[in-house]
Length: 428
Image 1 (tube, rainbow, N blue to C red):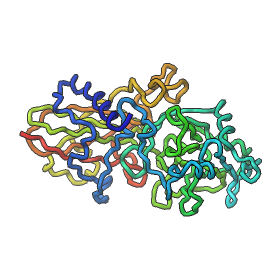
Image 2: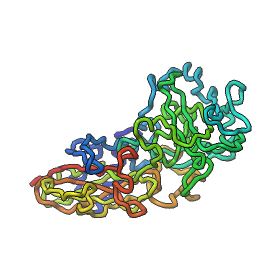
Image 3: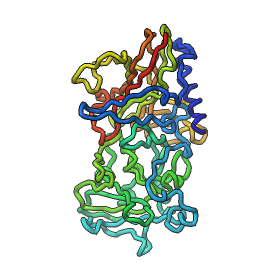
Image 4: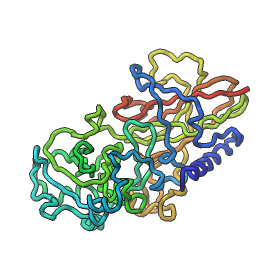
């Protein structure tokens, strides 16, 4: 399904809701029209300067089907050239095909962990793809996750990721002590300046707190082999983390006694240990509303580590002065939107069905809880008729702890959570 097909499907999903609510079809905005609305940036605290807002990309904010086909994922791969653009012969040469892939698992030479053995190319013990699949026969897991970037307010894609828990590979080295952190990187064109590294505390690797899925060495996306563009043959996927933790084209795991994160992203003033935030965004703003008519709006919410209980929207006259000392719009006239139910067609999967033993789903393939953490949900709202004039539309989430967006973590470098402001005009 291409992007245009997705927009049509998503419009159909929400159109049913709006028509049942008595909103005229002409008032329902076609999806993809957000860019036509005048948007203004609002900082995430009073000291932030306004900045251009990246609008949600349709690839990762799907209605029905829910999961993003591989070809529709948005790509922000690093590298010059990006590794997935290499010709097949070169991919084989550097170990980026399933039959040539090898993973070295070693002790950190600078801060060594005490291991029973290392897995290296030099002694022909590096883990190969067949051995990884052998581990998968006993330990494979799959879970849904939205892949998103720390610093942009749009998802890259929703996927059902499958692989072997990272801990199963770490245990192959028979670690004994002095193991505090794992760091890892992927193929980077044999250029040290292009290396991109991420890391995790060993506790997160060995245990799964808060009912999270495990960190995995991923080799399948939506039931299909992970292709080179998505980081194949093997990548890391960290369920609760932003994309920079889920390194593509994995080649090295280092078990270390280092006491702190050493992520490349940390060198760029980013909070590298911040998990996914919960926030809302508009996908379909008011479509040329007229005075005296109900107004339909809809959008999506990223469901972060803190979960989601509701989405709210507010509309205020654009010329109404905002009260001082309210950078998070707490005094805006917020009203509850409608969270759409779980999809009936999960899309991009065999028969549109959730496979058995998928984390977060019951034996019938239905989610145990909705909306699922670490994924996307969709919302709609029907606003009362307004007099002619210019207005500002905002949306926000309330998480499972009762925190209203952008709280509890309003800081830019720990992940996007700004409340967007969209200006629209009601015509006489």
